[in-house]
Image 1 (cartoon, rainbow, N blue to C red):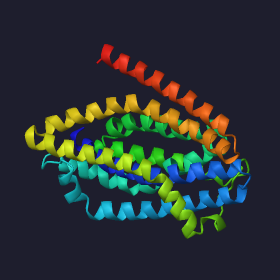
Image 2 (image 1 turned 30 degrees about the horizontal axis):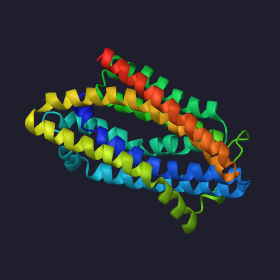
Image 3 (image 1 turned 90 degrees about the horizontal axis):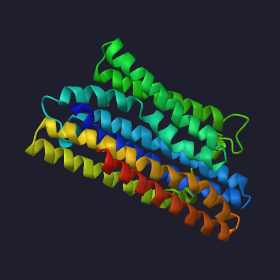
Length: 289
């Protein structure tokens, strides 16, 4: 648990770059669809996919080369480093799967296939839940089994996303022609995705500083406690994040179509839901800490 805990900032950084492309490209895709510009929407999706591949390749290379100093920087000790190294090296081999599944799934939602997009998440989650005990305990792989389970589950999710986006059911098909980068499109995608990127990066920075401080003042036990707390925090924050991501395709499409009244009503409705969910989760956390 301690070894995996110091790897969390790395997974947060990977998600940050996935968010950079998805939270920038998917809204643009929705807006252009609302305007009736299907080809431009397809080009934005293809450019975002290429950026995901480039970022994924760079992150994999940097992580594999500099994993030892990074892990010690993130709060690993001589005791936890072997576990963290075993987990991280395997996890990094699946970085491309994470980038594709997280980065391209919003484009499925942007086309109105919410159930298909939800199945992407369910597929990865269920496989991970099933494979974790089998690999960790059944095959006695320990922390490496947890990493392998994550890579396999993310690989299946990525395959599902690509099969759908290149298949016959999709509205906007991913093609090699749409993957050719255009400077103007790339600029729009990156500029729009910067807010989500910085949110994820700062979250990773907080985790790094917490782990390093806890390792210095309290040792491995304190890092383990922080790992558990981060898991509880995710339970609280993810539902709110899901609501905001779910409203994006609807708001983007109506904005592109010039239906600003619908956009305002959608924002008010989503804000009300977010407040209700946040208050409910806070109350549950207070009652059952």
